[in-house]
Image 1: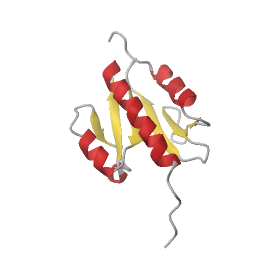
Image 2: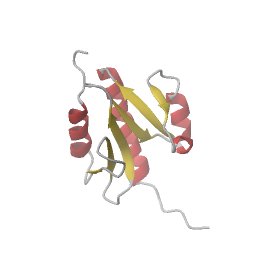
Image 3: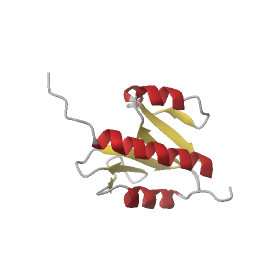
Image 4: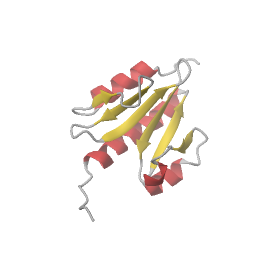
Length: 118
């Protein structure tokens, strides 16, 4: 897999691109979560094989439905009904698209207003 994006390079990009982003491991060492300054999750990453990884992000329901036509995109476990998708990154074009979507996820999560309790 030439020109593959390494999981470490993806991790660095996530931490350097988004202001006050930080990394956490609430699900164990194989799953990295990335949160904004308020502690809101905007991306989750798991290493697969060398040079491949999965990254999960929030797109919103409509955008997620559109993204699911791509063969390397799937509904995210547990949170898919809320517009989260998972991208299997094995080639640079998949990573480029995932980067755009992670930026959207950051915006959605960072701009979300607190909903009143019912």
